[in-house]
Amino acid sequence: MQVADAIRTKRAVRQFDGQPLDAASVHTILDAGRRAQSSKNTQPWLFLAIQDRDTLEAMSRLGRYAGHMAGAALAVAILTPDPAQRWSILFDAGQAAAYMQLAGWELGIGSCLATIYEPDTARQLLGHPDDLHLHVAISFGYPRDPSELSAPPHRGGRHSFEDVVRYEVWKDGA
Figure 1 (cartoon, rainbow, N blue to C red):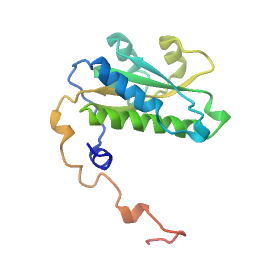
Figure 2 (cartoon, rainbow, N blue to C red):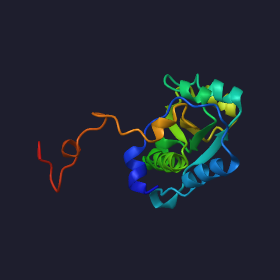
Figure 3 (cartoon, rainbow, N blue to C red):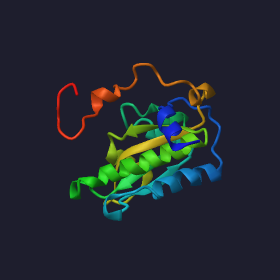
């Protein structure tokens, strides 16, 4: 799959078929995140790969829209230093998340971000150190409906190019 095709066709997948991911696919996804670019090459992330069914179920209750993690084959918790230290920490974590999602998409694996609204509960569940923070986790799995991998993009799902791009200086409607 070409990168442009992955970007054009990638969509959030929230319903998974329950099939486990093989170790090579999990490694490919995690390695893509590891290889993401970051501000000043700080690489301010650690990834916690979660495949235990009970833990995935518990994670699904830690965010208002995190329910999809319950049916995932894998969740990746992206742990970072305190983002108050440097504004780019969450941007860099987002880069890693995007790389992992695109790597999964190329393998036919869907994914969806989940904001973690109960970080203290997550810390108790996952046992990560106090100096690491969890704001986002990503669910991964094979889509319950395989046609999601090849369906055309939803009409009206994206703002038009003209609505979001300006050149050189800001001009309304240009």
